[in-house]
Image 1: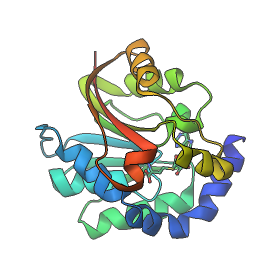
Image 2 (image 1 turned 180 degrees about the vertical axis):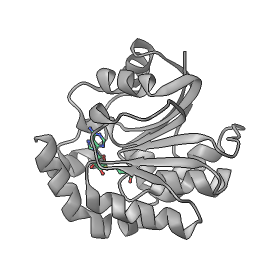
Image 3 (image 1 turned 135 degrees about the vertical axis):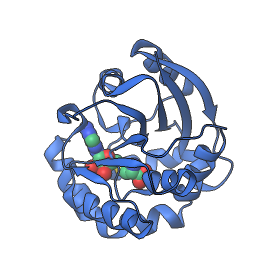
Image 4 (image 1 turned 120 degrees about the vertical axis):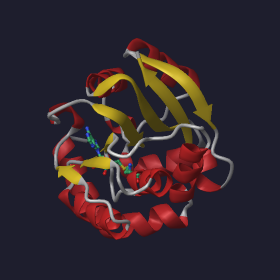
Amino acid sequence: MSASDLSLKYDRAAPAWGDKMRLLGYYDAYLGFLASQTFRAPDGNRVLDVGCGTGAFADAWAAIHGPKQDITLLDPSEEMLNRAETLLQRRGVVASRDAALLESHRPSSPYDCLLAAHVIEHVTEPESALSTMRELTERDGRLWLVVSKPHWCNAIIWLQWRHRAYRRERVAGFLEASGWELEAEYAFPSGPPSRTSRGYLARAI
Ligand SMILES: C[S@@+](CC[C@H](N)C(=O)[O-])C[C@H]1O[C@@H](n2cnc3c(N)ncnc32)[C@H](O)[C@@H]1O
C-alpha cells in the first residue's frame, strides 16, 4: 500500500480510532508500559510521538509526566492529528504538530524521548525507520517502542491494514543495528494488547 493510500485510509479511520483504542485496552496498555520503569521526564522534556494516530501514547505520557512536556505529534493523517491535538489540549498540553511522514520530519533540535506505537509495522525497512528515529534523538535519549508480534489476532488485523509483525529477537536486532541499546522489554499483561503487541525501551547510544 502506498504512503498516500495508507494516509487516506487512516483519515477515514480517525473518527472511531480513539474510542476503539480505549475500548480494546491500548490506552491502559501504553500507560502500564510507561509506568513500568522508574524513568522520570523533567518539565520541558522534548517528546515526539511518531505515527501518533489519535494521540493515545502521547496522552498516556502526559498523564504520567505532567502537562509541561514539550510534545510534538507526527502523523501524515491530518484527521488523526486533529484528534490527537484536541485530546492533549483537554489535558492542558499545547502540542506542536507535523502532518508528515517520519522520513520527512525536520525538527529544529533533537528530541529527548520518542514514542512510536504500531508504526514501524507500516514501513518497508524498519531498521531504516529506527535509524531515522535515532538521528532525531539526543544521545542517551529514550525510545518507547510498541511493535506488533506474530499472533492470529494480527492475521485478522492484517486483512485491513497490511501491517507487518515481528518477533522480539528481530526487533532487538533492528534496534541494535540502528544505534539503540535495548534496555527493557514489556509484555502487556492482558486483553488484546497482550496478544497483538510488545513494548521495548531503548537508549540512544
Ligand atoms: C496503527 S496506527 C497507530 C496510531 C497510534 N500510535 C496508536 O497507537 O494509536 C499507525 C499510525 O502511523 C501513521 N503512519 C504510518 N506510516 C507512517 C510514517 N512513515 N511516518 C509517520 N507516521 C506514519 C498512520 O497515519 C497512523 O496514524
